[in-house]
Length: 220
Image (cartoon, one colour):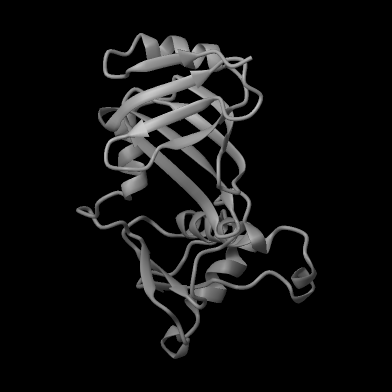
């Protein structure tokens, strides 16, 4: 979503513009939420409501003591900095203000970023489907410390994470056309779905992991 949605693409342009014209300690950039909720994939999919345009989620406020150095900035960067610097943002009706720059030295990283780093790099990545969930472009990743399933819904990006230490049993069906994998999870309902390609590789990796009980089944 942060790659596709115009709201996040614009934010990246604002960040780059500020980094181009200010030194790191010369400015403060604040994101101002003007709409409840997060940018959604539904905003960019073809639909009748698109006639009204993509909704605006954020505006910005730049606070700076030093004048910006526009000597190497592009015209669009100069326009963005001037737009958000020469304004009185206190009158904007909003749903929250979030500092983007400078980053607080002691600010914790996001939980999803922490988990991704702790889980390690993917060993296997496969297109997947989950039973009972209408996720688009879903994929399943086998990481050293978790199985991570990610996809898109009308509300945006969705993720399901199964830590290896909570994975009680994995059942696979090599010849089945529909569901071909079932995860039995400690403290949660079983998760069923389909690994579209590479099921044999998943079986080999899981079978070699002492933390995981793998049960292969044949269903002709």
